[in-house]
Length: 282
Image (cartoon, rainbow, N blue to C red; front, side, top):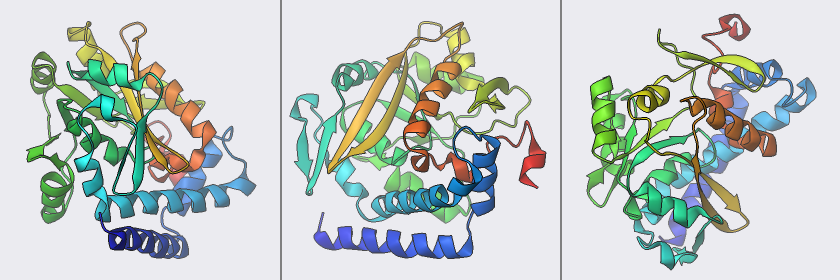
């Protein structure tokens, strides 16, 4: 990766962050979410968290647009880490290598809109993990094609799918694919499951628990990326479902990450609590 691309990424992030902040993009939604979950931030701290969230988000989008090829050239052997590629340091968190090896056998992979979550996909694919990630197609179609063919594709393999039926979900598990779900979104379908997140009631995606009900021996993993100084660190953890559900464990994990650094969770820009309490977003 050329130094020029890094400069482009930083310039894009700086300009876009300032533009979005000036326009007040998602400011009201972020403030509403922060105040609704007031154990995270009182009113006087919502503005700094909003600005920091925009700064982190635009930095990661800049990397996605200009530097994403680096993640698609990472070593495939876990023994090759830590390493340096294109001037960036990459390493695994303690214990992650063993979990990543287990993920090669398939399972359920839960993650969140936390940190540079898009970069997890190509990194896992480079490690030989049979990742398939369920994404709803976005509009316009030309942008969706770019995401599928250029962003969410590694070594000629597109890991993005639009699975819609229970049969499709179970087929992926039976084929020993690692089925990825971003599990921190508000679920607004009739089969959504009730839960709790950041001290408030929420509706959770029912798919993980559905899969565990029909394939109870399926391993469940949580992955995330973390910046530690100059290094990009991949975390991987296997979790044990409680009472046939992994969502409580996932929500507890995400709450811990948010309390460490609220500005790395981009779910603040989403209406996470809308289906339970739509009135707060008026």
